[in-house]
Image (cartoon, rainbow, N blue to C red; front, side, top):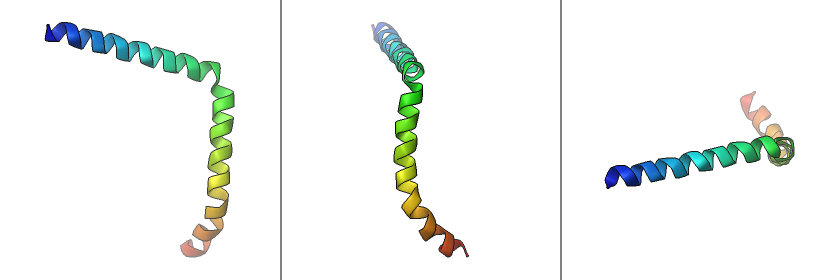
Length: 55
């Protein structure tokens, strides 16, 4: 019984990974652009603060 449960969990996990990979490939550009925009807007105010501290 535990082996059957483990197998079911494994299949569910793999199918979720496959769905995630497919979704990433399908909307890769859009998602990456959104993520990059968010990262850039977050890091732009931080970079002038970091550079004087490094000096």
